[in-house]
Length: 243
Ligand SMILES: C[S@@+](CC[C@H](N)C(=O)[O-])C[C@H]1O[C@@H](n2cnc3c(N)ncnc32)[C@H](O)[C@@H]1O
Image (cartoon, rainbow, N blue to C red):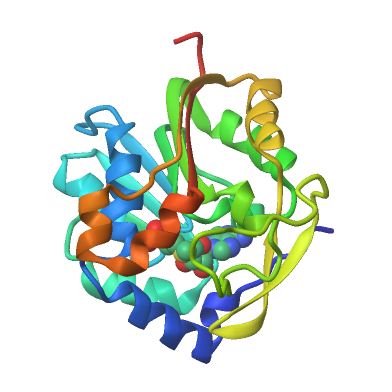
């Protein structure tokens, strides 16, 4: 039986994470989302699934781009409560369910997932499901914490800002981080596992990006400096088809 942690419903974690995300010039807004969106086709009239949709930002963006309908799923009730409060658009359906238990009622043109798959223990099972949930020629675009980051299991606490330690990159394992609270569970996987598993279940690789801030962005926000010594994110685009 696979393990599923719902850390975003922990009140202390939720408070810390909400404060972090309450910043329009933050990491997600400046680096992650522009990269994800740059890989997507026009969303007009498409059916979309957002896995780990959080506050629903991408779901609302997709509707603003005239997507036909959007399903956003997340394991966290607290995250979805905010998503629902912020959402007026029709044709966005939120479901509180972990990805491991989700059974979609339809297939999708596009599946997106931002910084969520490193919380999922069984990546092979996940990739098989993603393949089956897409329509022919459908697109999957996702971001995860970069394997260079998850290889350092104590994560974000680095005292020097010009180096990044890597430990046991080879060992694909559960890692425990302190991020707002102790005991945040993530799963480290190598780059080859992230990519080759997608190929093995039948996807065709279209793009791999490692977004990092420009010098101008670092000048504006010095806390971004760490993101040029190693990439914070791995962003992947695959399609169900030959491309
Ligand atoms: C870093 S947040 C990202 C939220 C959103 N995608 C964004 O980029 O703004 C990760 C989200 O994944 C959700 N999550 C974690 N594990 C999950 C699982 N097994 N199934 C569904 N959602 C999960 C969390 O509750 C959280 O909302």
